[in-house]
Length: 221
Image (cartoon, rainbow, N blue to C red; front, side, top):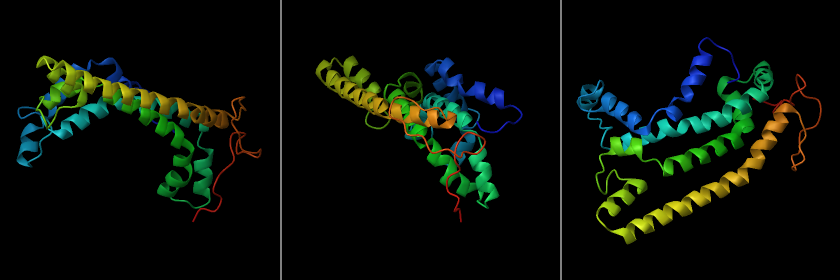
């Protein structure tokens, strides 16, 4: 997000692809890729790796539908912060990983955590893609939303309501965490733009590089 390169606009557009594609279609794509008769199926079977109808398939499908929420929180924040601090750290002799751990990550940590909470909220309610790739194997690949459907189809309404209530409580907890972190993300954006806000944000002192922000960590080993 901080650097320009060929194809950046195309890549940024593709990030939103999971938001526009039906989750069921996304699950079918993964079956065509990783299934036994899929494009990568024979290679995966040769190496004894199972993705479809297994836990890895659930993880892949969930990541596909949730990663845009993280990316869309980080991209505006990183663009607003610019790259002056990273360049200053490199001038001071820091390596690539040092720049990431000492400069970039501390600057985006709240935005990253906020995006992860949004992704978690989306993942808890994901049904379509996971339903296709998991196979509904009870006790092995069924998630909570899938389990609600299984119980309901078995006319076990009480158990289905109990699981649905637990999902609702987890969703409320996610909303509470989101509300608690929203102010910190707003403060990070305000600090990146060097614009004080009236919501309790405390910006760094003056003396920023390029009229944006102070360079942190002048003592980089």
